[in-house]
Image (cartoon, rainbow, N blue to C red; front, side, top):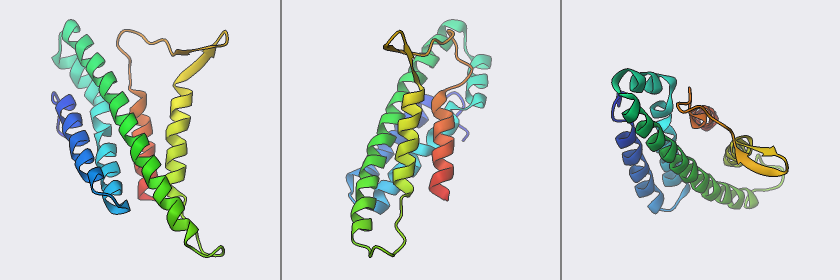
Length: 156
């Protein structure tokens, strides 16, 4: 990715492109939509954060982090919806197979990863759920690790 300085534009365009593919039903198009969404991982990488620190003033850096945090939630939501649809298709396809035939659970496993990520991003404090406390400028985006892991699972 060479979108340094344009991370948010890259993510928004990727999400739009993903939505376009997802509008056409079917596993192939949903899979492409998922792949496009996962390709946003480098925009949330340590390199992207380092580049932002180098080029932005502190006030602009705060805005950048807020924008990227919002976009990370959008990407996570998009991926969850795509994986839910793909998991349903996978289940339907598996139900058509004979019991002794190999059944795919690739998307189900990926969906579980997203759910686990969501659960880990919240902690229980005195019986209530709060988001983890973060410094003003986090050193990383949690979604980067999730996107990286999902990309590896998609390739396998």
